[in-house]
Amino acid sequence: QVQLVESGGGLVQPGGSLRLSCIASGSFTSISAMGWYRQAPGKERELVAAITRGGGTDYGDSVNGRFTISRDNAKNTVYLQMNSLKPEDTAVYYCKAEIATWPHASAYWGRGSQVTVSS
Image (cartoon, rainbow, N blue to C red; front, side, top):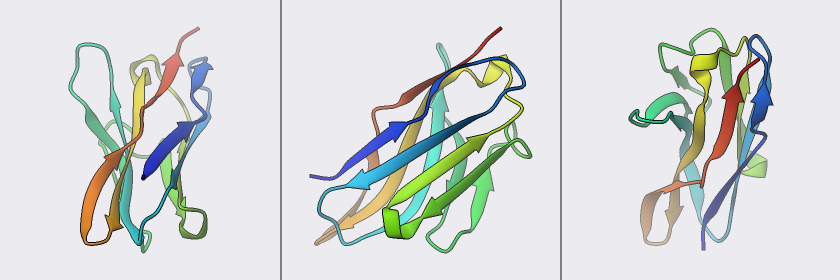
């Protein structure tokens, strides 16, 4: 059973920082792309950032320059460093990973971590 578990969310003031972590556990062969998505109330889920196994990155326009995605392949973990947070960053943040389990590869999602930016 493959699981993704996020941690690190919470309440932060505007201009502050948070670091999200997501660890993959269970029985699998490999993890290729990993990423973070978010969904605010009344809005569609959107890409925040993604990273390939080799370290190539992609960011949503609204977070480019403020957020940094990274990963530790040995620990099956992806991180999201969020700086200069704004109230509009408030959302549930979801981890996603493309994970290979013989004989298939599938996309897995975490349950989400709430991030609230408010004074």
